[in-house]
Amino acid sequence: MPGYRFCRSDDIPLLVAAHNACWVPHFGAAHAITVESFKRGIRELGLWPSSCMVAFADDEPIGVLIGAKRDREANCVHRLAVRPGYERLGHGRHLLMSLANKAAVLGPPRLVAEIPAEWTEIRCFFEKSGFVAEARYGDFVLAADAGLGDRDGADPRASMIVSIGLEDLVESGAFDPAIRRPWGRSLASLRGRSESLEGIAVATDRLEAYLLHGVGRNGTSREIVALGVAPGDAGPALLALLVRQIQVEGHDVRIAVIAEQEVSFATLADLGFRLERETIGYVAANRSA
Image 1 (cartoon, rainbow, N blue to C red):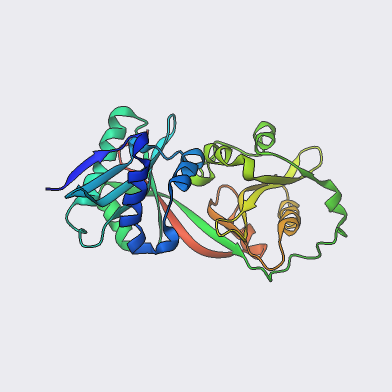
Image 2 (spheres, one colour; image 1 turned 90 degrees about the vertical axis):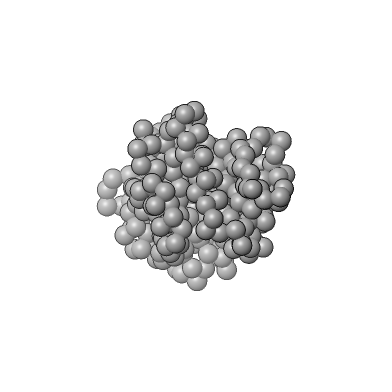
């Protein structure tokens, strides 16, 4: 008989082993995690061991749910996988519903998931489990050979570029926490990785445009984790000026899972960014308070 249980903080090695046994066969060795990377996920994404579950058969992990939690915001299904050979036996549904029921009792009741649009079978599973689509996000890439103009400082507006931090953006009102962003771009997640981020902005008597960036997950590309422009026609050109400043020769500039409320997809397209993937944001129905 299969067994299921929620985990504790001392179960991180078990969760890592279960993840690698259940997720990696579907997505490849590059997606394996370590205890160190799981702990980094606790800091950056709010991974919460007591919101994680493992399914067992004869003491072997056959299913895993990695959950994240923000106390006053929501719970998030970060990853859910069943080991090959054990699919379609109800293990994934049991894990998912167990977290949903726990969230309903202990809170916060809002339970979300973000699923790539092309994962139609997984999306169907979540929809049949009571989740409804509420948002659409995009992954964008600016190819390494895409030109946005000279980077030699000839643009006179370059003198208006200043360094800026996340908290400066929040205090100035340029970063609006009220915009519903995906989990990894939320204010709490950005604060969790703020030490590894750099920010630049074009400043007059206000912040005309800004972006926060860091090294991409692949270790080479630049990743923009937050960006925005003030109202007015000059915003897109100033944003292009900032993007030009962080371009590293031979490497792409990427923006992962961004909501159009943060900056319009049309603006990104005008800057040369190409939509690479869409992600659908789901929320468990009747649990969105």
